[in-house]
Image 1 (cartoon, one colour):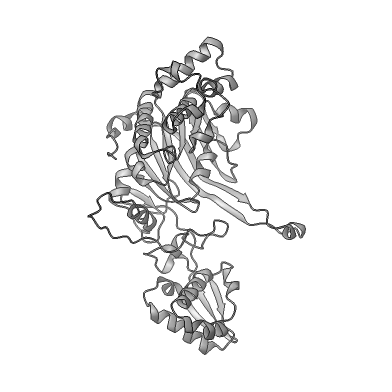
Image 2: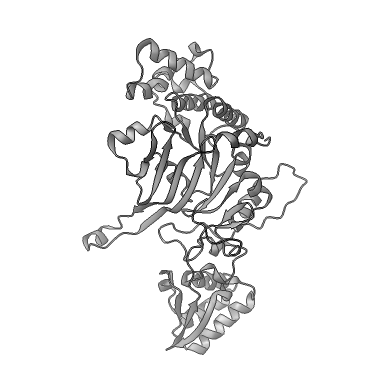
Length: 442
């Protein structure tokens, strides 16, 4: 895939104003729990899908939001349009003609009116189009809903939108149903429906992930052409850094509801700071089969968003983790169980000494282990440490004290790191603490 066209010089002069301003945005979802917990009035768990995101989107900019499934990027995009409820913080839309409006406080008719300025392109074009509507009806439906056109004027504007997205001659497509179109043609129709209201901002949620490789570059080029011709601003949500490199001016890397690194696209690719960003870049496939690249990929899986790790959310998987990353009881359990997978003979004896480990699943900076004597428990911990002295968890241990028949391990307390300036980006990582004071927005 070619690199993104160099349009920064002219566009930087044009986008001097902020169009979207997010201030400590949070979107939390309450899990209901089981029937017994509801009967007893116990509170369910809370999924922090977006947890304290602050950023500004400049008019005319393309901002990429990148992360794995479950990182919160789609929820963030939906919140920008009021499709996901805001738990705290704010989203302010700086309209070009009507001044600032707080999206997170809009309801009802006011929120519906926002659709003329902010629109969304969804991931699956097959599901985004009503199968019983013709393309003319589907693309023109927003104009009907908002009472902006009817009759010959409605048809004229539909034809104009279809022509802009490359569905021409338009007469061939007006009477077709979505089932008559290819995947790429359906996505063009979805984009036409999004631009027909002449919005300022398009939130594009994985707009090419459901398409064949042969048409992905064409759709992205179409979106760049529309940006140039219509003065659009994009929030481009993706898990694919390769397309983000081609399409975006800036990239925000998300992990478990937080932005962990944000900066210009070239800086992110040339000098990634956060270990998670490095892992995503390392996972990009290399098209040359003769070229071997080192793959220092993160261990384990993305944690439970309802109970994220203490400190830095990425630290249990991080190959560069250090003392102040936020080690806790769950990390110790994972380390003990990993030790048992390497030794069949150790499990039976050591499990009797350490006792039940399930209580370690409650996030805590203290972990009490053992029912077979403190010296025996210390011996097991020393044996585990000896297998890998460089395991970063041990650097986070402040003390180990005898507690009855076992021991209590104390970890250094640490909160989630804030975004800090590091070179040309902002990064939320304890490895970059000193360049400037902590910054909460980018």
